[in-house]
Image (cartoon, rainbow, N blue to C red; front, side):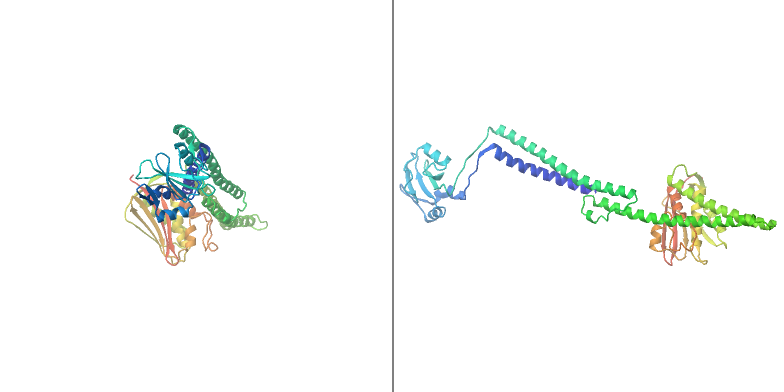
Length: 459
């Protein structure tokens, strides 16, 4: 968009300069010059070079065939006049031309149309005879000649022309600026209107009619935003349904066992009461975990004062996470761990362990019982790289593109319980530590999650 604006500004500048120059030139000509230039179709070279076609035999003059043909073509007459004003030779004359000219007669003949019997006269010198001139004439109804003079001195004229140019330029710039501002403000106004409609939940037009608009990329972004909002709204609705289900299940358990315990006419033994109480506590823990997950994601989103960092041995930290993940898996699954160094990390153990445990547990939850999980740790380019790999069924490209988005649940969402927040939280935790997280997967080839964290030298 920035380049488009610059291009439009350059076009405006160039067009303004050309328009100012053209308009001011026309104004200067009509305002400051009197009269008009020569208005005829007579070849100039014929007037200048007619003397080359004159033949001289002593004091007698003649005209060669080519010169005579030129005169006939343009219906011209010719006279040769000496320094005293006497006509020495004439051809194609109508018999009414003067035989003698004074200096003032010659000036009038050249300067004023119709001064010589209604003819337009042109004068040129005979090159090889000093003081001898050639007059060429034509019917003034066919050929006219006008003179023009400069209005005032050159300095005055220059000042007038400059003033005219700058005045014209100012007017052109004002008009161009108005048109340019309209070209910018109208699309902006439409964009603001579209954004306002989006904020109210209304649908904006498809934008097909705005493709050629100055801010076409802005309207494309608005269309993309509308699509993203619609998609997010769909995900939000699905997430609310899932959350409602995840809350409703433990609540139903709590309600069911509470109703059992309050039934009249039945005496529960201690073992039954203990069993029912454990089920209620487990359901309460499930709800508490869900609430904690929601609180964590909001806290990470705000990003203020969330992390409580401490120097931690990376190898011990990863081992602890692996053991915790194995405790959650039933039956307990084997997990392979390898490391090539023992770096130190400055991390929030609680948050980052939650992230790593989630990745390891997902490898078991989303795959068959035969899945093999490997965790590795190594140093690379001044950072610590932790990989969680499995040889499971993998993910398609669509799932891979959205795997870290909030509320997104993959193709197997109906088979696996969850809020769709786990990987989104994992990403936000890693980013909060100044690290990066990536996922690589192919269907049937397994999945790899890579956590890259900054290393510290503290021991």
